[in-house]
Length: 398
Image (cartoon, rainbow, N blue to C red):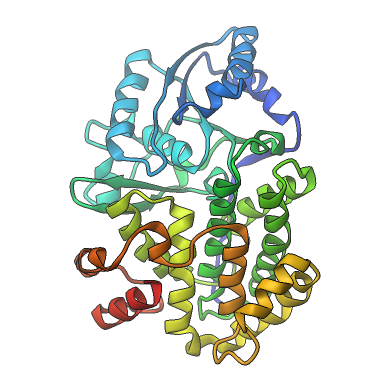
């Protein structure tokens, strides 16, 4: 086991109705002026924004709204939000939405104290921030886990780059996880979120560093994600399934699964970032295409871990008639690489793609994908991906 430090200062409020604490908490923390960051209209349409504004009004706070953050967030929006926060002298930020809104808000939190573009943080040309605006989060989509970690990902369309960055000052102050807010998330975005949380878990699980308890946690997260994720996609009003998926997505990337390891691999994320930067596809959809291909390529290096996943996940999935039929048709028994056919069948069962062609990315796109994979050096922390690997993984994704 490797040496490790556990640090997570996020206060997490989980459960129905917890979002109704936002106004009071902001006031008690001493904040008077708040910039609210939103996505592309769902918080407004659902009435959630009205609900939050009523709280802020009751608490005697002032606020402004920055709206229109894209599903694959770009640094330019963060730069514009920084200028808004500076102009209004915001004392805190309130991100209302999914991972794209929260990741943008993290960039804004650091950006208000510097004069350069936030992209300089991601590109590696800026000094580490010494402070950031306090960030409060109302999560509406179970997927990325950014509500309880220090990481953020933004995109630069001009350079074709999608990059992650993290800093201890970017941990949210308080995150509100009200599962009732996720009931209106469409089935396909629910599925993308399930694929995302599973990918985060697998990235850490496949690290070769020895940490058996962390690995046991990861196996259980995958098992539960398959069980509850299928239910949440099939019935968006299944309250128990929504709660379980929401918590699983947070645990997948809040540090629980990495203790005793140096880091996760995240090579699959590196490959997917190329796809979403090129074609503006949903991140979770891209991950569900890349992961089976990556496992088929590198799986022989960690067969025991794949066997443990198959043994843990298969029995409970076979209890669901629709999944049982799909899994049997997938022919996972006798496969030279365990778990991968099961994983692919599960993704198909929840309706997230497993091939580039299912996203209308045909052979005519392959040369540009390969060029970008090589140009941006899409690789992992443990499993090195060179051009021959890019070529084979691309062929397996097709």
